[in-house]
Length: 210
Image (tube, rainbow, N blue to C red):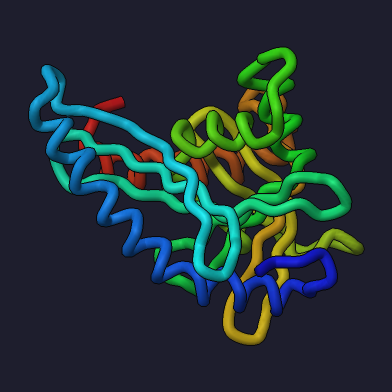
């Protein structure tokens, strides 16, 4: 179970140890979603389920079926000093994306714009809308005290943060969420580059035209 006293290495190991079991549960749940989607008029269904793992960690299982292989995203969430934190394991099983409470607050402030909504509900809104994303740690050079920076592109905005190289994995800490119109002049080149990569990734999954 994830506890506040754990360091990044311990948290990563705990999550990765849980991940395979949670994915098996997700694939089992997706079978019923697929059957229901096939029977539906538009052949598309989305569902997000809560799951408590054997390690006593709280997970969200986000499932999206759209006339093909289902898209599955799982996220573990936990409290640290009373603040919600969430993490998603990337497909390489070596990269973890960390979403802070501050990140979710900015997502609400700058995109969702809903009053009186909990951080967990914000997470449940964010994940389905942004279940395909591109992250880059190379396009923004280290300058002065600004090192190990992460630039992430989502469907509706940008995540900025830092990464930490661990023994067997990498953890990306997304610190804030900004909308495209907030991009500064000196960030536009990076934004355009990663946006193109994002569109290609999105098309690969959903086979839609922009």
